Image (tube, rainbow, N blue to C red):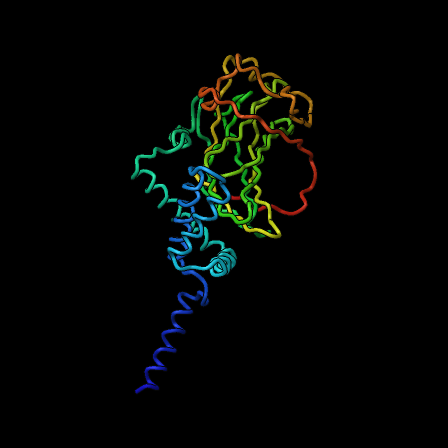
Length: 317
């Protein structure tokens, strides 16, 4: 009888360690989701607490691990496993974001203004032209640490259109690995290229704004491209969930029919200067929602060079 019980116990352990093919010592899909939800809640609480933010975060995360009876080593092993199964991990993070969203609504927290942009139509002076998935997950490996996209223009675009790429970020990081970089590029019909970059740090809403330089106000946009890059840290871990992505396109006031029909300028490679020379005069431009709020963030720029990329970037459509 005792031998039978031992055999049954061994069988139970084997099945428990192979839950849906998940090895022993690794958190299951549901367990990982629960830990991530509480982790982000702990981070949000730590940011509101007085004192040192890093110390508060450490203490709050330790409380989360004790709540779920999980050690740091088990959490690290689970992260390594799920990062190797990126598609499943993306589903987990999507559920995490949905649960956090419901919790926020339950306590009366309204959506960030990006939700207002997502309700815009695809036509009109101010429109949301985003046609791709509104969420993405970046992981610390060479295949999944870049999200890239391309949007083709259509007849609703006008010369001198301005753009705003808006989204929310949710980092899950260790050892301060909570930064990423966004790049927004515009290719005009005369093959000229202009771009703007921005560092992303911390959780919350972000806006990457492109103001059409005066030199290119007579040109229509051929396509819009961009990417978000998550650095891979040697001594740290960081993954990034990007949600509620929208691309707001808004027309400049006072564009005449003759301006729309004028010949293109010669091909030029444009570099936006940090001095602000590439920023349009707000008196002659339709203001973006961000400008209407009167909270103008510092604009970061980047030089665009026509070179073959070091490695191919997967495009998401």
